[in-house]
Image 1 (cartoon, helix red, strand yellow):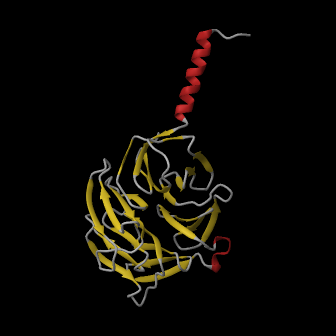
Image 2 (image 1 turned 90 degrees about the vertical axis):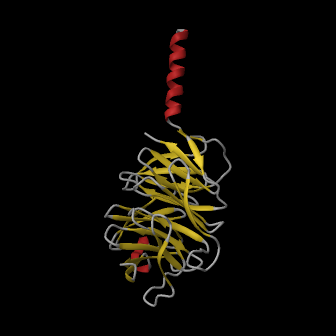
Image 3 (image 1 turned 30 degrees about the vertical axis):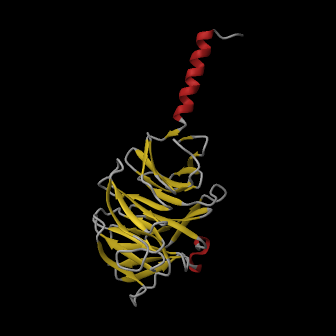
Length: 285
């Protein structure tokens, strides 16, 4: 039976709406980086980006205005070497993993250096730190790339415990990439092909993403979602590790293509996807 022309048009329009709803569409982008590595957003809506290529840490407004910056390659207190992961979740401080200088740097919200913690401190050997996450319980979690472990540091002074080693069993870390914290309960450690979940005391809980992830680059956690970026795709999971959606190049409407994804951050009603050169804002429902 033939459908009337109006019905055909309405069905086509409905299908078009469904396809549009399946897309993530870029609203705008900002920043001009050499080789960006990590992005985070603080509770005031400001955005921080570490640019490993230029060894610079930059702070932006959500509209892309440059508010502050610090760095340049070197070993001085205001310089970095292979700048990697950052954290600004507590709102009062920014923490940066200065990999090449084997230290964690604490800065205020205006990017003034407050203190550093690294190999010069006898009580702490952070190896080559590649990421950092601060908890509201004054515990700092450091991802040690050299020794494939997580260090829990109290009071920015001494190691309380380490985990993710051989004692973790299935959760033993082999090639960690990044980490993210979920409230007061869990720490998500990203590896290239899976996510390993620990509680904040260092006990292994579960893992997910095997068979779905490849060459994973960045991870972020919201109140109800975990986001992981691959060089060319975004995957959304529940906190329990159930895959909710995957957005590859066929479901991402971007102003320009060709740049690898490096990291991701959650806003209230948007996502910030960091590429090697710029930051892309995408509204979400």
